[in-house]
Length: 486
Image 1 (cartoon, rainbow, N blue to C red):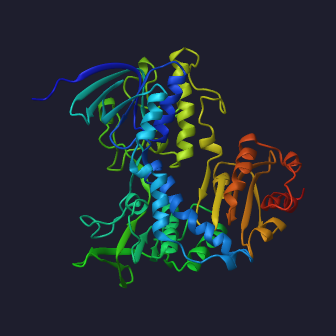
Image 2: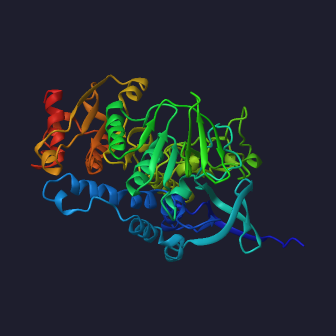
Image 3: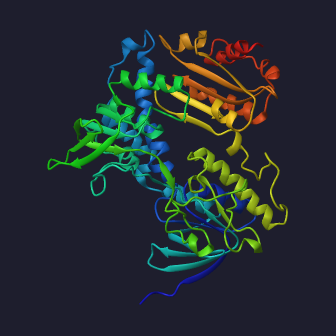
């Protein structure tokens, strides 16, 4: 006999208790509303257990070791090898050993209710939850339902992938041992980061990409990462099609490439991107469905409000944030969206916000359009924010750019034979930054200054008076502005 659903009414229902879900629930509670988080897996989500934290924990020891090897005096004192077991053990500590007790404790302390189960929309403002306790729940949201349930991996159209046990990024970041031979399909951020991490842990790594490496970044920056991977022994097969893959009797994988060449490896990691996890959410019940056989996507405004959902005539109610919204698949950006959306929901509930908010207000996700910061934690790193030259021209700006190698006193002191590259993208009509990219060892810490400059639309004439400390790598800012003509 199916148990009768427990019916509940609450101000806000949030489907997904990852970083974005936690933040939006926290904001609406701070705004005086009640919130229920619905989560079928670990509270804290992908970033905490299978993405940001474990991947960076795998990468950092190799970067630290290489940094020491790059400085005479320190290089003579290091062993030049990583202790793989110690690296994996440290990674485990950063994932709390895949236990979410501390995250659950935070949720409880924040005054948020947690309901473990799978949520599905059944109508406007209505969510049905199949509870992990075996009970069904029927939740009605007085003000909002928020989709914060993340993304799912994209499986490339490679013959033979279906039905074999390959690694996705989850399996790679939670691996208990280092494979002797590893093939990585995908030349994006996840593929390059994990290829380098496992190469430094002792795997013989081959990275295969249909096109070049890090295609969403400037070519000069990608080339530095390419050189870094090759220096670590990663075999790069760029502009290469993978025709098929099979798993052999000895559990090894054999890959066949477009040119007919074959290679065998012990583990296969598929890291070819992600898409919003919108299937199974019941969105068709409110008039939202995929079209032309393509994966579903949502259209959201600057507060995260989903366009086209039934019941919106009675007031805004369905929102999407983070990976589910499909704007920027980055944890920090999802949390930013969550804060703005939570504030907007609370303000609308109080009648303090009518219609669309002003750009750059606390209710608007304006940075999604102008200033998304992103770091590739390879060695060397790549850090960028805002528009590329191509994007800026497409958006109708009158654009110029300045580029130069990072070669200042600070970089020379930082490492022997330091190699880096920097670029500023400039709106010539207003003489403000539209974007910036830095590539080189430890450039991630340069990024927030660029983000502040882009968000604040700081005039270049004023930015020239932001004097970088000497001798730091930040002196590259002065060199870029001088090259521009200031």
